[in-house]
Length: 522
Ligand SMILES: NC(=O)C1=CN([C@@H]2O[C@H](COP(=O)(O)OP(=O)(O)OC[C@H]3O[C@@H](n4cnc5c(N)ncnc54)[C@H](O)[C@@H]3O)[C@@H](O)[C@H]2O)C=CC1
Ligand SMILES: CC(=O)C(=O)O
Ligand SMILES: [Mg+2]
Image (tube, rainbow, N blue to C red; front, top):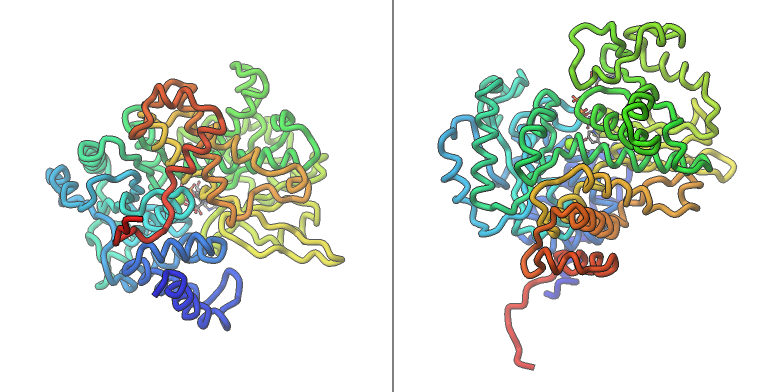
């Protein structure tokens, strides 16, 4: 059969299931679709990626959030064949030889997790491998990384999920998580092993509990080609959305430092967004100490215990710079521990904004801070709305549509990885991450933004990723970090124009075509 016939056969099978399955985010057949796609992934990788690329808007919610969350929760039962590598606490001292067991000569991209905070679903132990697989699916589909050169990794240091500790089907170590120096020693050994075998690999840290996310990022980012997607990728996507929100109000982007921002959650994602937004504001205000101080006053942070003020006991070091002064809070009618609703209502009271923006970024769908229906009906038809997992647009009546943007790090991490790979940069600098965010912010046309569309549709993800990767390559060249990739050495890279960089990126993106098996002479 031709590849078209094979696709038709597969799609007919899949569509048969979908006839009764059209039920938006609560699609009861989502897991069945994931199984069918997963089986195809196992037996015909090329065709799997053809299906995914051609129907990315439809199947990203299956291989990625929200369905991947459900898959991880049920992974021990769904497991049929292994995918990726598992390094466990019991493999200490062996990892350097273990990496040579992986059959691929070259690995470009690793997504690693320890399963300690999978989406908003908590500690899922080794079942979190599903998230590393899903992220790498997007690396292949969006960034055109060769699927033979990606490696999902699970670091199994145990789990503190009591249910999994007792589950007879659980696939991982059934003991409590390693902690402290023992934990760090495992991650250190893994990093040393993979970078010894593949010195040019890029390692994306994914869904580590915030306790370790920041520490590991600081530990490795100046030595290895790595980044933390939840801290840095999410921050860039949020900044792009926030700048879009300023544009959508009909204001120049330079007005961003005047915006008041309430952040719900002070974990790896929330703190990542806060730090990046503060730096962006400070840059716009003159990039000095006073600008940085003044930018800090635009944020209110609420976590599970409510508003964070300087009165908070045992405050996390990362949240400390954003704690509100007690006097200032009380002048605003707020206090330590005030609820999210109280803080938002106070912020809205003093606001002259014509278009408040509400980003319900938590995943998967059922973890969203609010639904778009809630947001449009309570705050007003004119708001800007984005969510981490996809929602349907809202019919506001009278022919008006409330647009639901998807604000997810999927718009950045594939381009950050691809751009880093093709530049050959030794590290991933703040400048490269900032360039990625600015590229995404600039991607949307004025007309779209004014209509409340601040993030592109996922159907454009391959094109966006190409542009983001080109922006990352350009910045790496500018910062003199680019050491080149294959035949393209550092000197050649420096000679490329903007258009040539985009072309270079495009030419290096893998496409799912069957390899030629029979060579004909003509
Ligand atoms: N849209 C996107 O691209 C991304 C979304 N996320 C999502 O963001 C969420 C948080 O991720 P992390 O920060 O890494 O998790 P985390 O576990 O590090 O932090 C969670 C934070 O939320 C706070 N929290 C819990 N319940 C709360 C409540 N009822 N009200 C206010 N705050 C509350 C906790 O105190 C903690 O500060 C997850 O659901 C994750 O899926 C994360 C990365 C990217
Ligand atoms: C999207 C993502 O990285 C998360 O929810 O953790
Ligand atoms: Mg994540």
